[in-house]
Image (cartoon, rainbow, N blue to C red; front, side, top):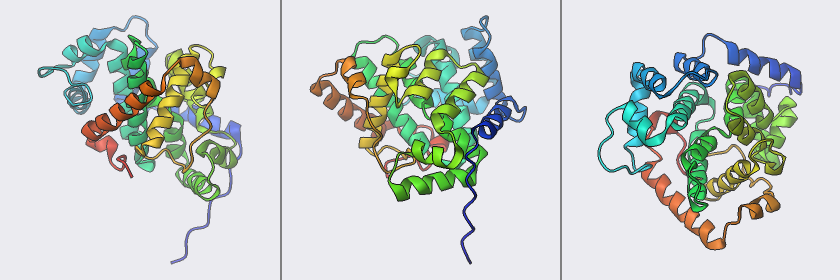
Length: 294
């Protein structure tokens, strides 16, 4: 049987943007995604609202509890309720975990290795933040989970064209963003901006999604984008999951230097992330299918 012909290039940024914005407003999005997005846009929503929301969704509730009871967190004692998880991890972290897992669960069938890469990046980001003594290390982890959301959305909306972008990246041995621009006229960072704006995600999350390849251009906290760029590089170097291309993207040396890591700290981070991924990469079996080390 002959192979199907490759789809024609889109190369129309406005068309892609409209499709992304339509996706963001579709009532067919999973209920928990719509609820979490609405909660992010509601200044009056608090921890109790998150706990009630997650507890109503038995599948998501079980996933959250499985995660917080896994070796990825290592809490002493059993955590048996979403409310308890909220106390330990905080409102923003649990809210971000719900959004991350729901989006990957619903949209990522076309990019099965991306969850593993995103989880590896998230673990590296948390480890790096802890090395710096940052108190928001768990929130930085959420930024790592969501940094490639634009890839998930493009692959969901345009599966044949995204396969073409993957092929271009493999054949040309170029960064996936370059291949995406060749096929779509836009890349995953710009797509991340559109979905973030439509969903009213926090500014620091949007900044990471848009500027993790160009951290010094970040509009809010450039150090967050720089941390995620370094974490992305660590996940790639360790072969965690599949980011969609065979090459290491350029790293902003000045942004990396501004973080102030020593060689010892980077080596310790790499070792810690490698062990954490081995212990916990299968903690969410549905999302991590195909996402283990290749």
